[in-house]
Length: 410
Length: 172
Image 1 (cartoon, rainbow over the protein chains, first blue to last red):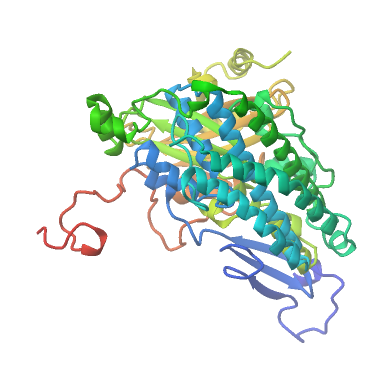
Image 2: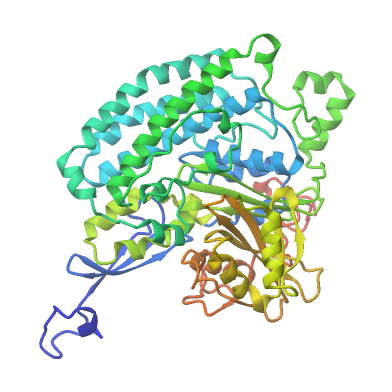
């Protein structure tokens, strides 16, 4: 058997039994950046085969969702891709809104876009700087962390939390953005472009970085599509598929932005695509913020759609108005019936098309909810794209694919 | 000419006059079903046809309907034609006693883990799958947890004594 797979290894008959070594990369290993395991079969430093084991942090979200009213499922989506949880939250709200046939006001759409693009920036920033860490440039990661912090402070101002955000509600936001939030957004928008430029200067033409990433873990467009790649990983292979453009949601059609694509689908192209996407995101945030500022007077007070059956009423109304009290009670106790229907909605998540397939039979909770988790889908290509490469390339490939264990295991 | 749901429906009816049935359009997405022994033929046709070109498998999952005898499990494929940007949903129903459905791994590499996940949670046996074993649950598990016969814990149960979890130890 071994003579067929490794014809270059010539050893005397019967000298050793096994000519390759097995290495367990993970489940907990600093280089996996998450809880999942790779069983690598190594010939020296070259990878003969890799087998992935996932599921260490499976939390049965799909089962739990079958017992929860819609608004309680938002917290489950937080814990999928926790590097960009606002996108997951918004995606879930929009799925519900599609099922309920709710039309959100434009201002809500634009505010959502600001949040989602901030989340995309923070996701890509972490992913790209981790690629830096895995190629030996730790300082870049530590430097940009303080700018992710600025993004998290904006979340904090809007929803009170940072990582698992539970941001927004079905129909809009839980409260209007306050002035501090906008001030913090302005501060971020003023400071961040310079930092992103510095970040690029440190890595993009850095010789060590280039030699470590160019040609590492490549995948061509055809294989990437067959493997169900989406998001930056697919675009790095040269396919300009972006859910924001192909099936616009939350008024993305009102914005002017480019879809950056790569060519070779290797780690370097993935890195470049993510960097360019951050610039596009900044441009979108800028446009969205300008649009938000155009709303004046009462229009600037709009932060949710008018759907009393699903949107929690204001506390002062609950204390003074009978109707609000009833809705409050019904929503909190999860006693609102959801219309029967079957809906698939997807958003462009941090690492690809995040889809929600929701079936309702007219009860109070979903009959079935399935998450299309991009990580889970593209991580299966890992053994194919690392086969024959060096162990060190496999590590970079792992971080450059942006595999998030929380999303993979649901 | 862009591809519309009408054209897809027409093409499918020409090719599979009796097999492909139950056309619907919930929320604008064309949905149809076929007998389970035809799933690969239909998928292959959708993949190869020069006009349809549904070559991207977006999602694959199962749904359990315990109240439909003989059609308890549904395997749902979400397909996407990226060129014309059209999505469709294709369902195959199977009985729960012999849940054998042909695998789609030969058409889509991505179906590999999706089918493993579906097997893991619903016990759909994908015939011809290269490596059909559990993926998210432990290998020793001997049931399929997302089936409806395994309800989540009843919030009002009174037989447990776990004060720490807010139910109070002194109810009984």
